[in-house]
Length: 212
Image 1: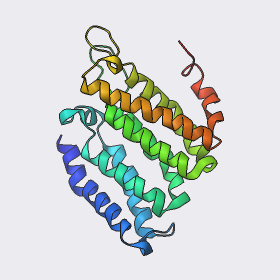
Image 2 (image 1 turned 30 degrees about the vertical axis):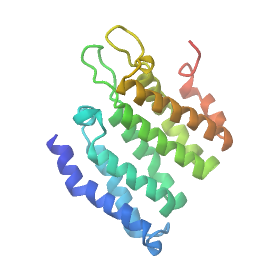
Image 3 (image 1 turned 180 degrees about the horizontal axis):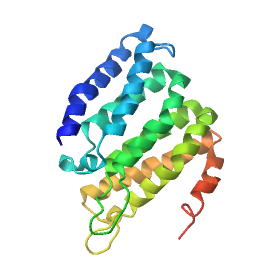
């Protein structure tokens, strides 16, 4: 996709460079760093420009480059900016969820979820909870409903015979879904340890987590 490629060339590679540079430059890593804050603003803005369909249809079903670059950058910002990254996370995570799990239309025309992409977003969210615990509650309240829908939708993917892909043996899709299931359970465990399990009872999640 031309737009996604241009985004990666102009923004993605820069975010990656800043992320890697921050690992060897302790002076750069502080919540008052104007460079990192500016880069964070650009990263969130770039996610808004990302066409949803281009994420799902990339070669091999993998996340687009700009999404991967932003994920790498955000992982680093959790360490570099500390709590200074929290205000940007609801919008950033919401845009990544929308990109990796496009809204459903009809069974015949709706693109599949990007399972690998959803897994990466859940992994980042899990890291946010593990690092900030109760301080991440506002972030979680904002993103958890859409994240839960994306995870459950992905885990409900089925093959041509109507069998859940997660149970299909010797399948790449099945392995990716198992990885997603494991990190989702890990997020639940991290929420419990971080005294955030109560957020799964918010009204926005009503009906989503009921046993079927």
